[in-house]
Length: 337
Image (tube, rainbow, N blue to C red; front, side, top):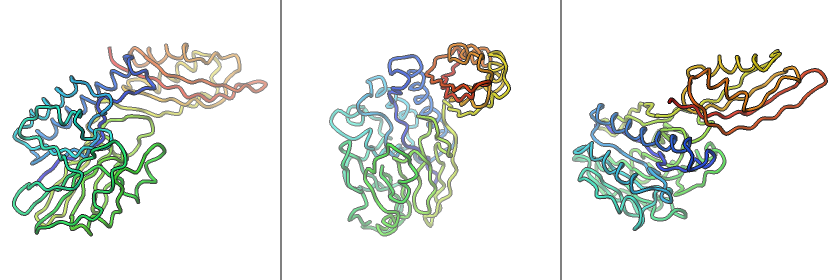
């Protein structure tokens, strides 16, 4: 059996740092939609037996009716291939949720219980799933759980494996926490999970990671995961890149640049042909009379990449007697006309 797993897409994310109602934020939200289309296309081309979503498909507080129609329609394209969704803390299940309001085609199954409930994928193969029914405070889904039948058992839910939590960085809360050992103790062969944006291929669990970048610094392998399940319950995994948008972190040494044009030329060489969003750090020593400001550098990015530019930027320089020791964080949003 072949499955395709993804999670943490966060449709309708605000991208507040770009100005929620601005063009840059709108492009980022469109890229999330395009990424979902890439995932569904991969499922169709790969002839998978089911598509699994580990939650945080969208933002509960921000989703629109248009997004609901889009999601409903794109999953309908896979019919009769089943789509299984385990709502997370950002797309929690409630009366006003997209999951309750959409008129789903028969191939879509949304898990709606706070406890793990079973669906049969085939004879002797069971998928257990559960939902977050509130935005916070959901207890661990494996607490007190044990499978009640023979066969191969898989789980799909949105939760925090405690041993991997420290790798997630700041701003991550431990929703529905559990220990890795609880997976096998519950009689499960493998757990397919959402919540952590950093991917992990554990012995008994898989976090696919967020499939399209939401911020800078997302440097690990993330995407959708093609899972091949053997009759004995063992799996093999292959991560596929499905992002419709890219982010780049670059550090450019501008030591020796004697004029603004030299700096512009350096930027042009490094940014040529890039798409997406680039955060550029400028380091080195330049003559103190060289004008280094975002407005003048923006033209260099435009000419280098042939893209119009929208930006969020910070710039700071410290001058010595003869040279400016310069460090800058220059964040650019790049897009095609």
